[in-house]
Image (cartoon, rainbow, N blue to C red; front, top):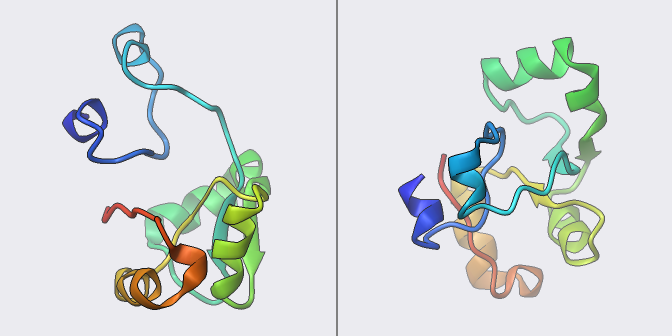
Length: 105
């Protein structure tokens, strides 16, 4: 929460709305999330994906991870999940990631 309050990060997923948090967070509601087909996102993520149709409907599955940055830039998704090592590479070498920030969860 401190990172959100001090603008160290811009976004966080699955945060419960409270009166206190509304003082410093702009809640935008459920948005589309870009993910890559074939990658494992952890047991909790996969369980939520299987059991929560509303959550699953928000996932935009792509075959090539380069498309997520393009979709984000064009406003088709609000956020995407990518392996950390790839994010370091993309931010340094891919024009679509220019001025991007990432958070390591």
